[in-house]
Image (cartoon, rainbow, N blue to C red; front, side, top):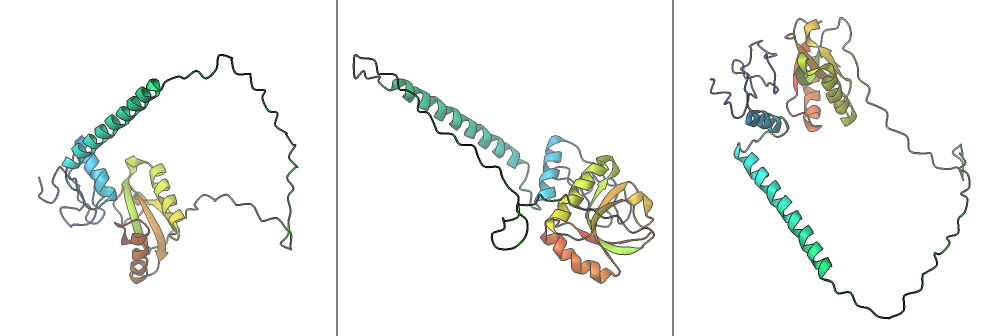
Length: 231
């Protein structure tokens, strides 16, 4: 087993060319090498942790979290039992032999609300416009037959499904990244087949793509990188 990929943490870079890889990725997009697979519940949890946080404290963190959850549940049960016992211990004091007169329910005045009217225009006295519903993020397609540079946000195995790639692309678009979409790597000779690649931007030069890379990192995609797409 390679020293670059200890089984308790999972792969985060290619053992051959040191390029970044995603959890469950089977092939390196840079050199095409097949990546070793890791198994186990702790490995899966560790991989999910590292996909969101670069620093992984170790497998002992799961035992600590489990103990904290058990302690919190025990404290909640103890509080509920204590409150129930205190409620039962409260004395009942009789203040009169006569039963209290039944209180007549108060009748609340009801009024028919005036029908809402819609006002248009921007002059004085016009009603403020209603809050508009957010439109779903719009995704773009890679230009047909065009070779260019882009920023790759994430690459997912085709077995993960296009729906997952679409969700990540929409999240990136709502975060403010421009020209976000995803493509099938099998249709482009410069990419290793069998992946959905989520990208942002279509740039004529590598320098333009590199300038946009920092914004992708800032908006929640720290493992994004630039790549040339050859049609």
